[in-house]
Image (cartoon, rainbow, N blue to C red; front, side):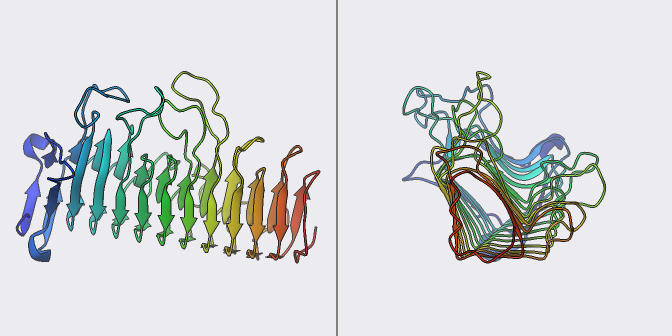
Length: 364
């Protein structure tokens, strides 16, 4: 535990740089003693806290921990002033909780390069992180995570803005499989509130992310007002984007469950689903509420550029333009289809040869 005080970077570099890893039996815990106020103030260009192994490729099976930092907890700190807040690469079983991270010139919490042992010669196994109860604000980016089977919950990510190039200045961004993102409050970020599936699942993957759960989140007032700005959607879901480390196009992912979210007053869309035909797994959307979308840009309330998806009990209304729709659904070719029933939508546009509407309320 760390006693009350202000701790500044050493030689204008990092405040804390881990040189060893924890284990399951002997975890490393860095925390404020008895809830005292502990301030870590970093230097521009360097992470305030760094857990990284330089010059390690993604996948280091000869290392006892698979080339990874593991079983480390950072708890109860006030972190500011660095080029990144907490920077973790090649890691697993990392817990980041109850921290205030602000005024960082880069991203507040960033986990990249999953690393570690592989199950099939290509797929790196990392993750199992727990990111919860943190407040991240006035940074260039909020919480950006690569690491499968992680949980990101009860965080407050707001007013993150990247001056001059606000793209990818998301509240929370995730690019991994089987991640649960729940009960987060994200607002007033210059790009998206939640950007799930932001890029490939990991550096050497062959498809987009699969199996993520997005539930109970509130996203509002994301995006900014000037022209060259981020997308500004409340919740953006991408099951396919980009290329793998060999330059080959990614195959589709999917299999997301999106439930009980509220998205309102975002600059672009409330929920934005973007992929290409051929998702391997269907996505399921239920009990979501989207309203007052497209505050400053012409767009739909919800857009499903999607195949193999099912929509139930969603409410979408009051988009702020007369050009687009509250809900736009498109599945581009059979046998992929959108199944939609028991939704309440102000109006809707559909393009799908095998679409089954059921008894949805709405026009179009």
